[in-house]
Length: 559
Ligand SMILES: [Ca+2]
Image 1 (cartoon, rainbow, N blue to C red):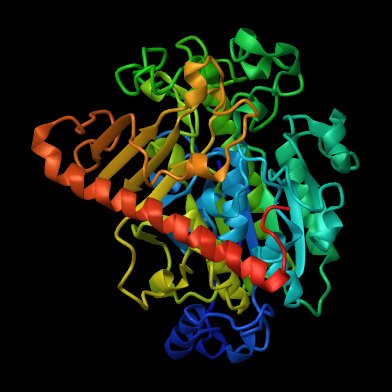
Image 2 (cartoon, rainbow, N blue to C red):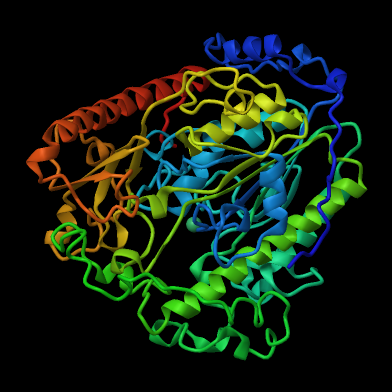
């Protein structure tokens, strides 16, 4: 199925028009290492040889697993437009979110910081401050002359301009909370009420058109779009009459008369041969013991209960929702071409985290398996020479790297406390040195989730779980208030209650825990030390960040 012709078939790269030479790249990269001497940001775009600055579009989906594209040889999902982006851009095949739940992950994309550093998460009381906001990529680009826009699920929930989106962006067509598949009747989605369509993803497509219509000609633009698909709350609301609980997903969504003949949400994929995970509906104790993770919290959450009866319907809807996003992306690409913006607009495509869909007997996120932490990440850069396009890059990259990448594309010096690194040097192969492992965290303790840290190398992963004292008292969350304080998430002197070690080369599914096998003691100890080092380093970086904000703004970090 193809909804649109490839929009930028042959992008001619005039070397005179290229935005970065090798020398300029190295110069720009070196700027990132130089600590800023004042709170003022300086544009560095004057060093770029082009007169015109690049436009930037960051597309973020909700709960989309890595490799859910036809170009990644997915056996079912068809994504011709995302395939086109990948084949003309660069695909990162080892891309991860640092923290696989919606809110902290989104703040990480905005700030380039881990949750433990920016402090915003579902189990944290901290509200993103205006001072913190001023160092996010949209705020920095706006301050430096970009016309900025936001569309869709903001997902930060606790932020300074809630209810006044135009205080954060020049164009705002977003919502707080979650949107259902048919969002126009929801009080938090009234901003979409004047849309032509009724379904959330096409409404995102229409909103992107409105943004492009609104762009001034004398400024570059940066648009951030957060799709609500393919999140379970969307697939669970394709049939509003289903209600919640066990009735969800028990009937085909296209029994809903509004979807019967829809080209995407009707019969698509329903004749496909889909294998549901072999462990769907099985006991999870063999993977994570009950004293570490009590499953009822996950099972009682709207649509994370993947049973053998409902799992197939989950998959049909999930795959349809991804193709729905692909269709909106195709319309965007066509529109950019029509407007003559295709050769000057960088597009980054990713997701806020992955999802378990019956694997290990579970659904949901928050755990640090590859299926929950690994994300799609495509960067389409129209200035990239043809010889560098369509490549897969297996470097270990994380969600903290996206903000510095956007800043570098905009020619803006990143704040010195940013934890990620720009990916542009990987795209252009200008530096061979890159990190050899990444650090992952889960600080979300609702739904009986444990606190977790992990270190992942290309071939090995070590995961350590810490006890949730609330669980032994029958509470779903860590503390009576439900929120952690700094000490709760400082693991430097704490002993994990459970560990996992996976050989990803022979066991990419992460099904065989080798942590108790003496044969792997040496590898286990090496990774334990790396995890402890990362864990203590992140506390140092947290202090550095808070001191920098305090110094610049003469204020306390917390409120
Ligand atoms: Ca999400």
